[in-house]
Length: 489
Ligand code: ACM
Image (cartoon, rainbow, N blue to C red; front, side):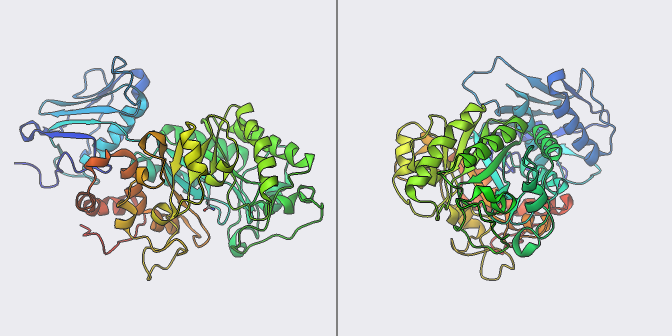
């Protein structure tokens, strides 16, 4: 007899690439359970031991001959993603193997969902083998800190929430018209003036990250295998920078702080050398604080920059990102200019706006897909949503799941995709609880789109697995929208 709370081996989000159940091989976690791991996997093993401790009440030490074994198997096929893993659950023990620590981490997230979320008298894991790897290397969430700021503790909590679904990038939108949220050495007024009281939408989103707080967040993300992608939005969306440093406008005249939600009225001055001194300094500082490979330079909605100025600006700024060792990501408007080979356009519109992204893909660029009508988590779920916007339409859970990034843009197929990202703009979101309400469960849908083989994804299966996940959000203290599209347990 199985314990009543035992899950099926395939009851995991994102759905693994291959699941072979063996009901004769269920594993009853014994009181003497211990976890063994190579030194390079010690942190991941400790995480698993902590999860087991919580649900079994047992001590769960780490030793050399545990019945639960984490193996780094560097002989695995080199073509395999470092995030791939194999999980064998048998009556006499559990073996998780992967080519790298991030694969072991991914496997532990799978194990976490196979374990109960709360303590049980008897804990049983379903027998069989999972072999798993991601569809896309880049699976991201974006959080807008500019319209409303969220504290480092809130951001860490969000990292925890997304990492369990194997999302591996958190893009932080750090600057916009309403606020500048990262301390930049040498430019103190950015955060003194534009990152404090009275900033954000309606003046209700104050705060900024010190350089040390940002570095701590980056380091915290590394422990969850979540890479931070910082965004400095330019040449538009820069009113907060210009309030702090009026010399960044073309006429040098002071500008007023803005706390409304308009877009498209501010621009850096493409014809001034001061602009490039500022931008290069900011890129140098942000790159220096960011060990991850990417630096996002925005580039969207530069509606008060002429096309010629936009080209001049981007053509000078894009190489700066490479000069400081980073790979540029930019919203798809960036694809209007000649891009350095490693640059990544991020598509965000509903319709193909022009041929720029397809042309970039044809020239070998990788693309991130974030179409607003399917992946913008700030859209309302339905007419009754108390939070959110609706300019890209209403976005229910099925609609956020039932699309595919390889179908969105002619000329941008599977092989051109670096991955998928779900942005969350924060005009209407004042707290972490608001953020979670909009993200969950739709961000879970995007996570599965990014991980699971396309041919294996179906809405009825996702809907059932998501419904069963509901109590876990509750146990984790994560707010979520109890969408009527889902039968929540
Ligand atoms: C965007 O939504 N302006 C990228």
